[in-house]
Length: 391
Image 1 (cartoon, rainbow, N blue to C red):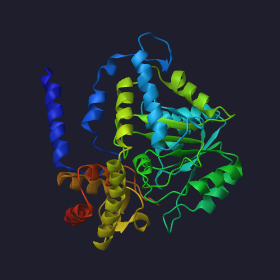
Image 2: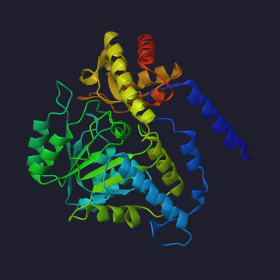
Image 3: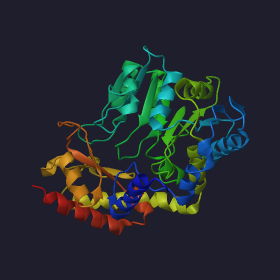
Image 4: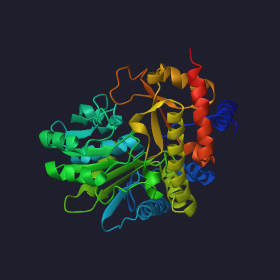
């Protein structure tokens, strides 16, 4: 690279990523093939529109690529083209979610129901500080204050009272298995659409290590860079039926929210989807959860309170404030020791989100780097040592 300044920064980031223990559950490491696709000549092409219906010329290979990506996405999750449609153009998870709402929830009068931030929900599930909470009425539900897991009866009661247009069963910091069938029943009981945001879970679902939401959801969104180990990007799956949800979402993505897709990233997504169909990836997905369970067990043995008592997925929340350390201080101390995590609110949060009561940690990235249960036991012990040394 001729630009020495940028090259220096890239080289420094390579070194940083190699030397740290990365526990951020929304980060992972792509393969060289994925990076090669993202850095390919497809970055030179403007492809406004959809396959075989572009607004510019010269898209013969682009059309093949986008069609292949969509085909692989459906195949990976066992979906039939006659029943499901997939859009692979959304630039990331947030605009993907926004597109679903724009397509299906009347602006100004529609209502979105999702989990609260402190219970593990995401900003784009109708939170007030997000555009999704400004354009639409937001209704949030919390986990049970004692068990710290979803109380489906309470969610159903709230849904029947509020009658949301759409219910979002999606999470960014909820460690337990989600009962998608119960969410389907809740949505049916109040006439709502059911959207599942499986951004954190996509790789686990693909690897048959976590229940699939597809038998129950009307719409499923996901990022492609977390447990799926792809590049930055998103997929939106929608059921094909008389409601025309799939066509509405395509129009919401383009021309509703964005122009030309980032075709180099679509290329990277296609590669990642191909990799996720391998037996090795299925083993990886199962190991991610095994590692998380071992991690949680050791943290509990060492005397730390793990939110909800453990995990069924790739992440866990640790109540560091119960040990006298705020989340912000814990994050900084751990980073100084070469362990990267993120401060995070916990259910029933009493502190500021900028200096909350806990940290969020996960196993996807380090599992990619070969860590097994015994390694995460050692990581837990190192975390314990660092946090107990905080003054």
